[in-house]
Image (tube, rainbow, N blue to C red; front, side):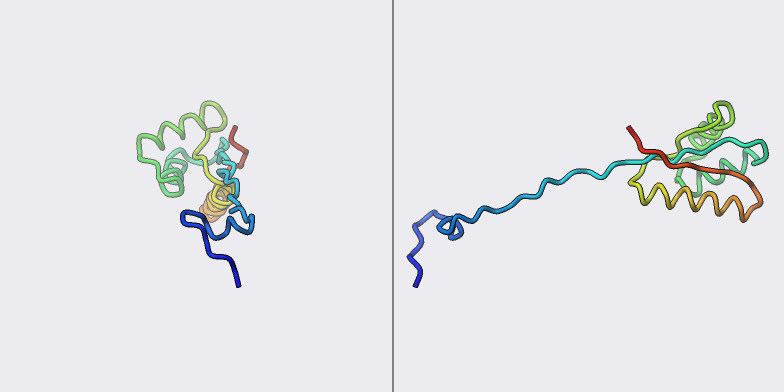
Length: 109
């Protein structure tokens, strides 16, 4: 038979049991980077940015212009699995539409 609990004492304390609190950390984030090419029309790039990254028209045009003038631009920052899936979907969609548009995924700093 166990001893009666002292008022205000946690029942687990009599056994020396401590509640473990796991250290939680946010998952690392990854950038989806769209790469420039000489063949994909600007309108298609804008369409892809709106469709896969939910950018409004004005932001999509700005990102497209950065891809065009600087050779690459970040389309979004996501957890690794989401970033890889978005990049894969963009590449597959571009292939289906006969465009060589490419994306890469890099760890965000």
